Image 1: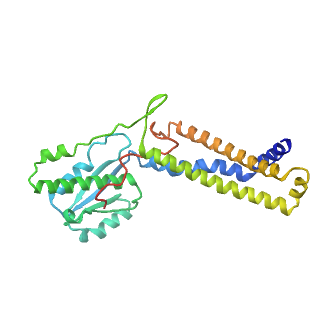
Image 2: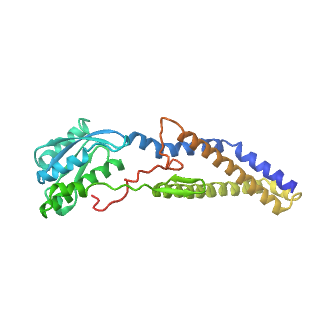
Image 3: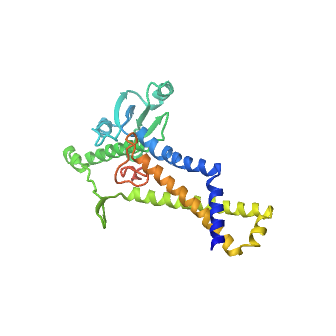
Length: 289
């Protein structure tokens, strides 16, 4: 047992004192923050201005603008301003593209003539990587198209407004400590990240054990050690030493994660675990364009 603890201590210190361990310990939480927190912090609550080119009926355009420019429900929702341009998409396409490239406008939306049958609008901008913007445009377009179809079917505008009233779901987890806020999307993303983290640790530290054994075999160190320590205890000590280094690294990552979650400049909703706050509105919906 004493021999195994000596091997464990040696391999633990050998991994912890390496430059790769220190760099990866700092780099992984930083990458998580860059991938999950900064895009949300930059995207949330922004004021955006788009140009609208309407080739459909005025009712479709009015409903689209009304839905998109509605008062934000929370401070994290985007605020939109719409400027209308008169003309067809073909004649305005080149000038609008030049204005986008010149940073005069962020982008423009085109409602084509066949939007009711084609179920598609066009969005052109310098950047189309914001899921929140795409979802807001999609939701506004769906409401405009469906409202027009209902109007053509004889449904009054007041009834249409009632049909569009949103129903929220207040999801709460029941635990031994009582009721706590919960989210299906954040729970899934948290489990996905944990599984991915375990995979990375197994691959990284498995390769580290293999590399260590190969190095000791090449330098004939293992033969000298095995002559005084049983092979089973030697290998067990190596695995436990590397595993202890992995556990220490994960503990440091978790500490950094909770430190980032506690920073006031990067707010994270209380119902989201491990930096994986995902807006429940941003989910695939029918009629994607």
